[in-house]
Amino acid sequence: MIKVKITNKAGAELKRELPTDIHQLYYDMREAGISKPPKNILLHEDKDVEVKLSSDSEIGNRLLRVFSKNDTLFDANTVAFAVSSAREEILTDLEQNIVHNQYLTKEMLFDDIQAMTQAAEPIKLTFYCPLVGQLDDGECDEYIDVGSGFLAAYQDQIEQGIADEQAPEMGDMAQYLGDDPGVADKLMSAVWTVEDMDGRLLGRIDCHLKEPLTDSELASLRDEILGQCSDGLCEGFEQRPIETDEGDLYVSYWNSSDDYFLCTEDELDEHLEPHQGMGGM
Image 1 (cartoon, rainbow, N blue to C red):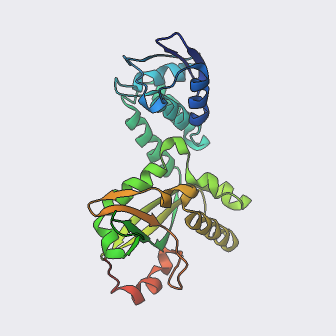
Image 2 (image 1 turned 45 degrees about the horizontal axis):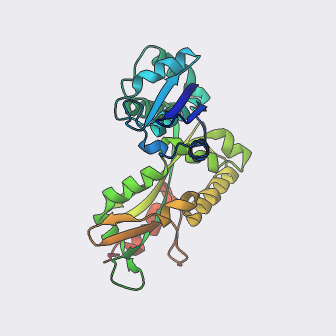
């Protein structure tokens, strides 16, 4: 979609087609003698590396216009990935918008892809689960367990952390929930986030579907979401610290207690009522 030529001051050069695996790109760059990470290489006027972007397609050439002076090689790969992986249901409209220069920035492009994808999904199914947190305050030898009151106070930071884990270059989480063929055919997107329920911060998973699930498909989807929660969300989110005023916070969508649940919105009341008084550090 987008061709890139990367050259450093010593004359080391690498050519690649975007999108590509960003880790492989960085490895290939280092092998070629270009040590600066893609996230730190500006597309325009970088002092260490020259980047030239081009394309053989109209879509690719139009996409080059969304990049600003502060955008990086990593951003260029993310944009190419977001467009190339767009759902078939929105692809024609998306390409027409790109051709007609509807996007002035990459953020406008990302927002519209998300909005168009969700608009193409007539059914929304939401799951909820409890969140648990551990705090590393830099003083204690062990992490401190924190309750829902503490987590609610840092909702914005937790939301940002989980959003970063689902950045466009990572692909939609729906790709990890397709073991059941029926679910794979109907599920268009899945987004992990959080929601404050009367001072208690819960994990929320929004699933957007083409059509309703059968009972067996619903059970399969629930099992797969539970697997992602217990694995730490792509095996990464719960291991990444979230900065707070009191120290580094680690948040998980899963725990092994008897109080754990993963329920739909319709089932939520029966799980919340016994815990309305839960507070926390």
